Structure formats: C-alpha cells, structure tokens
Image 1 (tube, rainbow over the protein chains, first blue to last red):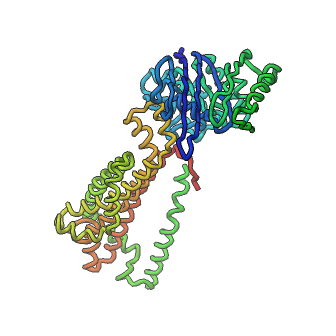
Image 2: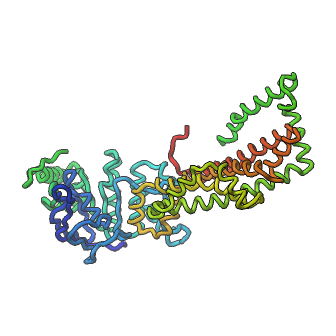
Length: 256
Length: 254
C-alpha cells in the first residue's frame, strides 16, 4: 500500500518578536513512528496548529529541525498530505476533478486511482457533483481523498471535523480510522476535542499554552475498534482531562 | 427549461410600446416625419434588406467592432492577468492605465483621426481602446478575488505554475472575466457608433448619418434597431457562456 513516514522534531522553537518576545513554541521534541496515529490536544493559543503547519512545511519561520524519514522538511509537498479545518475544495471542479486536481482524468492510471479513492471515502455516485451540492462531511471526505490520492507518507489534519455536527463528526472519525487501517499512513491530527483524541489515536500529546510546549505524552493502548462508553475509554478520558487541567508552570487554566 | 418559459416576460414592455406607437401614428397624434409608424419603419427595413444595403453596412460594422474588440479585449485580458499575478507589474503598469482610463474617449478621437486618418485603422483602434478597460479592470479584480486559502492547497499539492494558472487562477477569476467581457462588448459597440458617426462612408453609423441628412427618419430608426439587436445578441451569447461555465457557482439567484 502507501509508504508510511517516520516523523521527528528536534527542539523546534518559534517566537514572534514584538514589544516583548512571545514564545509560540518552546523546545518541542517529538517522535512519531511509521504508521502511528497521534493526536495533539491543548488549549487554544498553545500553538498546536502552528506546529502542524511547521511540520507540513507551510510555515518556515522557526528554529530547530523537522525530519520525515530522516530528511529535513523544507517545502510543502504531496507526500505530506494536509487536511485543513475547512474542506478547501475548488468550487469549479467536480468531486472527481477535485480529487485528481492537477492530474488529468484522461490518464487511465489517474482514473483508476481516483475511482479507488472515491470508493475508499464512500462517495460513489457523487463523482460528477460540484462542492456546492455536498454536505460538510462529504466535502471533507473529498478533501481527504484528494490528499490520499498522492499516497502521502504522513497525513496532517488540522481540526478536520471541528466544523461538523456531532453525528457527522463521529461518523467521520470512524471513516478516518477505516482509512488508516487500510492504508497505514502515519496520521498527525490536531484537535480540541477530548473524545476525538481518545477515540482515534495511539498516542495523545497534551500541549500547554504560553509558551507552547509539550506538557505530557499519553499512550493510548485501548484496542480498536473502540467504543465511547467502555470504562477504559472513560478512565483514559478523565486522565487526559486531568493532565489538561493540571496547572502548568505558568498557571494557565484550561477551559472547555 | 426556465428560459423557454420566461422569455416572453422580457418582451412585454417593448411590444406594448410598439403597439401604443402604432396607434398614435394611426390616429395622427405622432408626426410621421419625426415618428414614422412602426409598420412603415418595418417597410423601410424590408426594402433595405432586399436591396442588400443593410447587409453590406452591418457586415462592415461587425467586422470593425469584432477587430477592435478582439485587439482591445485580448490585450485587456492578458495585461489584467499579468497585473493581477505580479505586484511588481501592478506597481509599474496600473497607475498609467488608471490615468488613461479617465480620459474621455471623445477627447481622444480627434487625435486618432490626426494620427491614423479617417480609414479603418483609426476606427479599429478607437474601439480597441474602449474595449480594453472593462476587461482589464475585471480580470485584474478577478485574479485578486481568488481565495487565498486555495493557494495553500495548490502549494501542498505542488501545482506547477501552469496548473496554478489553469486550475486555480483562471477559473477563480472567470466570473469577473465574463462580466468584463460583457462590458467590453457593449463598449466596443458604443465606440463603433462614435467612430462611424465621426466620419465614415460605410457601416451602420454611416447609414444613420446619411439617412438623417436626407430626413429618412425610418432608416434612422432601422439603424438604431440594428445597433440594439446586435448588441443584445452579443450580450446573450456571453450570458449563455456564463450559464455554461459558471454552473459551479453557489450564489443567490433571485
């Protein structure tokens, strides 16, 4: 199937220099093994989205190093898929054209891959629909298909389901897990939703704000498929919540 | 489907006016020297059509307008794209264009005649100049209106420069470009009249001027109607393109 990537961050720092230096990210060290599903959770303003943009190559104003498969990240690229909070589909292209994007659907190879992707995100029958005809969840699935079409080594997701209603969100989470089980692409997902983090990932990185830093890394070894009602799930959820609420050195309170 | 059912609504006002006009002529309320009856105008139209006079002048006018429109429109589109794409080009080019834009076309006309004479060249260039600005302005605006967030997507998907233009910039700017196209077409048509009234020995503008000097009011009306009809026809073609190419748009439709 698709290649999976190992991700390493070594003392990544980022600061805005204004009237006083504002540390957005302070000494972030991370290690994500190939095929792992990791979520980053933290209060707003902790720099979790900024961190994701840095590892994807979209933000290059930082110090430290980011390595994917031992290679330094410089620019955004197809092998680092990125799912934004909004679907960001091209409104003038149909579903299949959006997934193909800059590739020509006349090539039989592309055609076949696009059809595979449409089946993967279960949008059969919507190939010729325009984004305006799709619901929020469907649009986000097209965006995921567009990223997976390029067989990325890592897929970065920036609060991808934040704008969806609760039903669609839990449905999308299951769909994403399905895709991950089939493809084994390394996933790094940023969220502010506790349940989402516990439900999806094998590793939860809890971040702290001002300065943005890693507060704790929690291993989540609940077996898949997970249910949100099991005692194990609730126990882990409370544990993550406690870590989130624990006053840090700077005494930032966490609010939901 | 919708079009075929609703087309008659647009015809209600002109048809009513024509009927009232015909009645006024019939009762003698309208002076036939100034307001010949629609039926007599139609008679003039028919005889001009049969003599081939009308076809000859329309053909010449359309060729002039088309040449001027193509020249000015294509330049407007290309320069508008360049100015929209590169801030450096904008800083050099846009101030000059904006300055030229405010000069009334009628003020330039004498200069064009001095430079290029009364021949076809001055007419085509005048039309080109008029057609240039709407397409330039709207293309420029269209390129700048493309959602910045989609450029991030193009970066992540590693679009080539060419794909960035064909898949992102042009389709994103298309609504504005088509609006510019419609405006340019109508301005080209307008400039054609200016150019032909100014001094010409053929074309629909000349036909009107010539008919006026012989007080053939009916023929003047025929000329005016020709201008209106061809102008509307060209506009309808662009609107058809809009319907076909902008199906993806998700806007309020009234």
